Image (cartoon, rainbow, N blue to C red; front, side, top):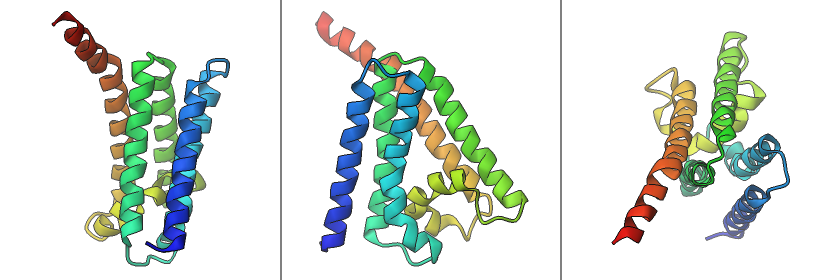
Length: 172
């Protein structure tokens, strides 16, 4: 493991620690909290995957790990918000990912390589994007929808399933 890889992993862990600290705060407006956490989840993965994605370089192991950690981070963040019954998070997920879809669509429509917001959410997915981009032209939309569905699934599992399992375990 190289020094830069180790630094990258430490940065990701630091940012994720900050995300979970911010999500535990109660005196901050929930939408501001969600936006701050979304930026903190996305930023380190964007930075690490940016160079390879800009130059369309081959994917390295770190790119694949970053993509998997990005998806897992959204899943865990959504699970926690569902478990905490943060109903405003449902609106946030829809708005955030629909805005990302709209940005990707506008970027393609206007001939731009990608709009900034879509780029911010697609670069962390480069470990997956690289392998499927040649086989499917609408992969940008599919990847954004994938993370949106994973976020929704995480929220619903946290909201419905985890309390149900906890309740069942207390009965026995």
